[in-house]
Image (cartoon, rainbow, N blue to C red):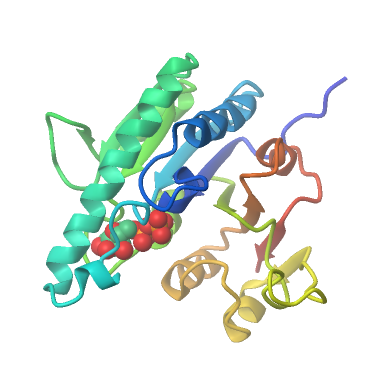
Length: 239
Ligand code: UDP
């Protein structure tokens, strides 16, 4: 008999870069198809899935391309980039018959529903994937912080931060062959050691609300499913 999921409801944070694959910009079709099929596996297990999508593959408010721009303007552009990614994700979900809804923190009614907490909760209960776009809707924040915020609002059991590396390491594993993966680490340790889990605002929000984060690789086939089944996958950041 197959194992049962240990989480009922999850918030998956996907960075914009995750959609790029090996490209240097934009959305890679094969990559996005692979990611949605990984998500489908856990939806099929009955897990309720909310997604916060980043925009770094298209625009980042603090990037050189935004240099000289008013920061708030650049950040609004970044948030709009996440809306494009959200639409691409929804489209990819539709192709594999996973029903999803996009809710945006910036109102662009022709394109996406506005963020309405109660409605998002209902979609999750109905088994629909909810994709949160436009971050928090505020400049000077990140989609990591949006993931912490929406995770708390949706009462999820855990935030799953999908990265290219399969967890949090003592050092950069690409540069240091002796770097070791943490199986578990506390929020205080992660903040104190300045480990690259999520940005500090997101980390402290999760710590204060006692919402654990699991950092894992979305590029390891079946990784998301293993996290959801409670296997030793990635790094658990806890209180
Ligand atoms: N952004 C913002 N407020 C938010 C979320 C995002 O201003 O609440 C902007 C910010 O400019 C950021 C960009 O959107 O650089 C893309 O988001 P992020 O860098 O978090 O995307 P990721 O790194 O996950 O791809």
